[in-house]
Length: 257
Image (cartoon, rainbow, N blue to C red; front, top):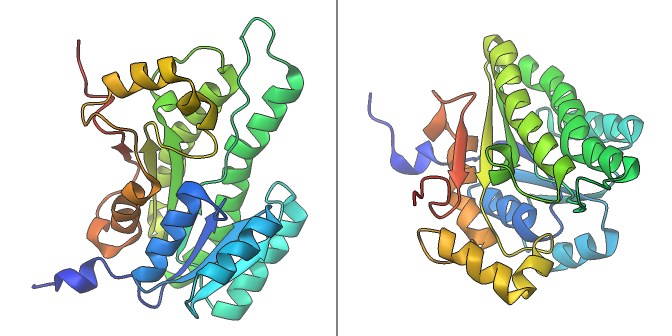
């Protein structure tokens, strides 16, 4: 059976939800989905930034919602409203995250709990919410944004490494449990990208040089580098892929001595 290449990667008639979509990687993924034909809900707590994106994006399939996704009673209503309006939710990208570096010797409970809430518990709760809608339509796609920290030890950031590692394994558990509903769950693992989250390390010339030297392709990622991989995982092009880790890291993980 022949399948047209354009339709294989198309998200036409799909409804996608992207968290942390006001800037950086989340915005690029959301805009890429728009270009591929999806109706896309940009969700972020940063109201001012999100409204700026709204002014920039000229697409009648773009929707913008300001919300604290860690407020589970609120986000439950948000998802219900999206489903009632669109009649479906096909794709969820759990992109929103924080990193709160500090030495493991002195790492505070407050930083640990904040990181856990946004980086692991919230993706789980959001996935549970969309699961109930996806299974009504015989399937869907959940993409969790993980990190090199899901695979490797990095210093002075125990919570981020722990919970990105947890998210990697959560993805595999959900893929196992929900395959029977036609729901595919995969990880999109990021290397070093130039975003607000990595602003300090990029500004540190020594750290920037060391990290750049480790990357096979010799440069940090740009948010636009995620668009193709995200569309691949969200589309029919990856319809036989679930429970997997796709790393977009310029060759970092594969790099030997």
